[in-house]
Image 1 (tube, helix red, strand yellow):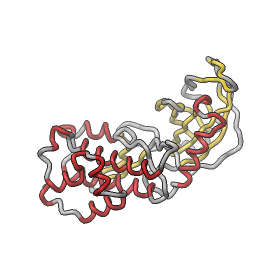
Image 2: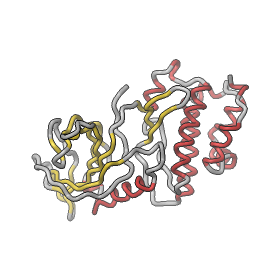
Image 3: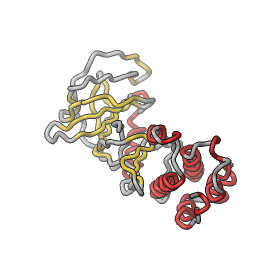
Length: 273
């Protein structure tokens, strides 16, 4: 299994910490200084207590590093935001508050802190979370026979995703961009132990975004069963869930994610095995 970053859950604001700056490659943009990369080398200490092990990845908002606590040797993950993507720390603060709201969700990661550190002469937000060893769903599927799951495993995976996302929806929130590259599989057997990363904030209707989560979950189910190539061969009970990927039909049949969860718990899928 490959090591992956995780998103962050229950966060609290901690006092500002300072670390040494590194060589600057900065471009001034208004009142903030634009940083395109932090490029923190392994072995460097952040916030006086985290030793960088490796860079896990980067994106539009910032970079994610795997770190080790100096005094406990516990591994963590930290996300450091680019200042131009996080003006007045609004993005990281909003994200922290959303994750605090979802702290009881079994599918959302635990966050340890939200604090400010100084890098390249700029005060930047740093979110620290637990570090989890797991595998992206997309990579997991690619390793399966014919690069797809059998019906039994696919239904159990779908159910695990639905139950996890339902816990988010019941808090009045949503994920906003579900796909196979932001679902992490930690363990699997009769049940799947999952975590999701990269929760989004779109600023529009939460109801519409919860509906979109349902559509994306059905799409994931369709893809892990082999997509268009295998769809015609699927049984009526499975096609009933997928609805030919027709948005209106899906949302009419499953008006909320709890209805989808209930259907999975009570459906007769004997025609599929």
